[in-house]
Length: 475
Ligand code: HAM
Image (cartoon, rainbow, N blue to C red):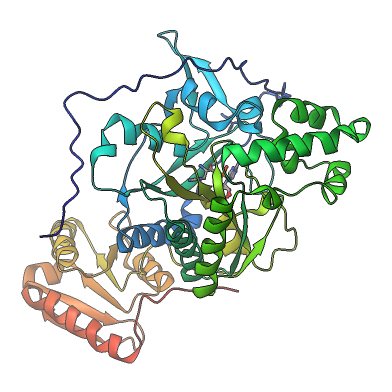
C-alpha cells in the first residue's frame, strides 16, 4: 500500500528552541517625499491595483502554477503575511539589502517587533518545524502564492507589494531535486508562452565559502580605495554580497576576482556537476554565472535564476524568478538539519513579459447566450430561467438593469454572443421564449420548458463548426 502523507496539525505546536537572535538594527528606510495632498485617496508608492483587464494574464500564471503543483505533487500551503521580524532577521542575512533596507518592520500593539514578509521561504521552513513535518514522509513539498513586501525603490517590474509563486521541497538532498525544480520552472514558463534561460552557480557549503571569502576580501582590499561606501561596508559586513554590487567599478573589478567555483570542495563540485548533467539531459538552456549568489543568505550549493531568453537588459532586475538549495535554513531556525531546495517566481514580472509578447488570454470565457427581457413579469421569469441555464453550464449573460429591447440587443451584439433569448409579456403569458440567431437574424418561438436543452443543442452544433473558448492572442 502506498505510504500516505498526512498533515495533521499536532495538538501542541512545536516551538523550536532558538539561539538568541542576532542583534540587527532596524532597517534604515529612505525618507520619501510626500506628494501634494490630493482630493482623492491615493495609493502608496510601489503599491498597485491589479485591474480586471489584467486578470486574464494573472489567471494564466495562477492556473499554470496550480496545474504544475498538482502534477508534481506539491501541497498548497498558505502562510501568514505578518511574522515576527526575528524570523527574517536571523535567516535572510545581516548584510543583505532586504534586511538592511527593505523590510517593513514595526512594533505591533502587543509591543512585538513584526514584519510584513519580504519572502516566504523562511515562513515555509518555520511551518515545517512548527507542525512536526520533520517526522513525516520526506520530501515534504509545498507550494504557495501570495503577496510579499519590500520597501525598495519602485520602478518597472519592481514594486513594494508584489506577488510570488513558490515551490519548496524539504528533506531531499539529491542533485536531481535541484534539477527537477529548475525543470518545473522552465516548463511552466514554456506553457505560458515564454522562452527562458537559467543562470546557475554553486556557492558550496559554508565551510568552502569561508575559504573563498577570505580570498575575495583580500583581493578587494587591494582595490579598497576604488570602492563605493556601500561596497566597502559590504566587504566588511557580508563580503559575498559584493558579488551583487551594481557599481560599475566593482563589476569591472569582479572580472579579475577569484571565483567561488574554484573553491568548491569535492562533494559540492560533484553535486553541482550532477545538477548540470540532469539539466543537459532535459535540454534546459542554462548559463553558468560565477557572480550569481542571490540576494539572501540562507543558500548553499545550487543557486539559479530564470531570465527571459531574449532579454536585452540581462540584469538581475529582469529575473522572472530565482531560487536554490538552502540546506542550513531549518537548522538555523532550531530544527534538525534538513536539506531543502526551492524557487519563487515574481508574478508581476511574468505578467509584464506576457504583455510584451502580446499574450492576452480572456479573463473568463466569452458568453455565448444573452437573455433579454421586457417588463417586470418577464424579469421574474428571466431570473429563474437564468439560473436554469447557469446550472446547465451554459455561458449566459443578462442586462436586467436595462429596459429597452434595443439597448439590450446592442449589448448582446457588443458581447458577440451567438444566441439571444427574448422574453416579452406575450411570451411569459404563452410560456414561450424567442431564440434569435445573432448571425443570421432568424428567430423562432420555443416552449420555455424546452429552451435550455434546445440552446445546448444549438451551441454544440456551432462548436463542431468553430470551437469556442480557445485562448486569444492579440497583437
Ligand atoms: P527573490 O529572488 O528575492 O527570491 O525573489 C524571487 C522573485 O520575486 C524575483 O526573481 C522577482 O521575479 C520577484 N521579485 C522580487 N522582488 C520583487 C519586487 N520588488 N517587485 C517585483 N517582483 C519582485 C526569494 O524571494 C526566495 N524566497 C526564492 C526561493 C524560494 N528560494 C528558495 N525557495
